[in-house]
View 1 (cartoon, one colour):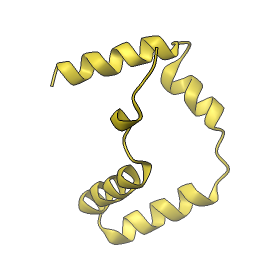
View 2 (cartoon, helix red, strand yellow; view 1 turned 180 degrees about the vertical axis):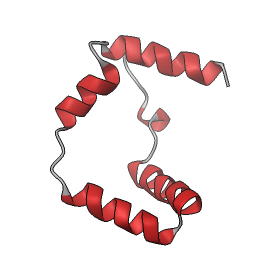
View 3 (tube, rainbow, N blue to C red; view 1 turned 90 degrees about the horizontal axis):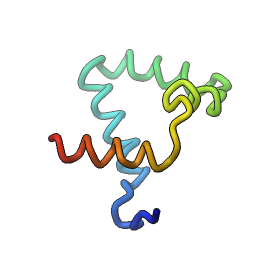
Length: 72
């Protein structure tokens, strides 16, 4: 399975978009507190990955993504 690089979202754009959404929902003060707290804590990304994706393979995740895109 290959994925075209042009199909992958730009990380900088995603971060900016996420921050915009949080600011609109929570306001600038709560967003600042949230970012400070989440950025200053050690994060076990492997544990997060396990919780989010369980034991799914990359192929299974890809199929889910494609399925969700076609259902929009």
